[in-house]
Length: 136
Image (tube, rainbow, N blue to C red; front, side):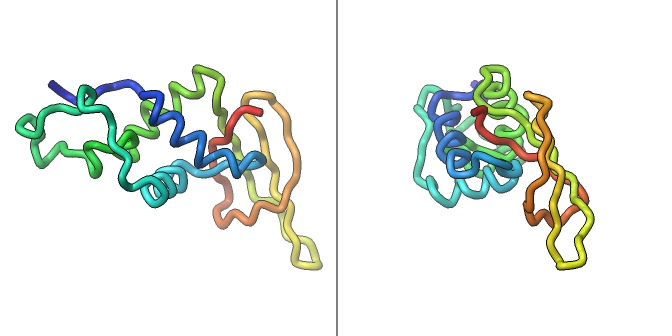
């Protein structure tokens, strides 16, 4: 028996809980994962979704084998794409804008699903970022 290769309702609910306070520009995948692990450290998936301990090798063992979001890879490859297919989340692409003389900077925010675009002060440190947010 191996780990499930689909998202559970509980894993999707945890992502919704974390993204709900960030409706405009969302969060990066790493931030979603870290916040879930910090705010819900004791969450456990149903036993039927977890392989027996004897079948877990130490080399392929995820960081949190019993947690609904067991690894960053599971979140990135399974949970978020399934939520996107269900229309629950979509990607946001942010590009850093140029800084004005008064020190403010507006960044270009492109909402991939709707094709909308706006300029907001996001405070990103990189030239560009991909984020996820709940579909309004």
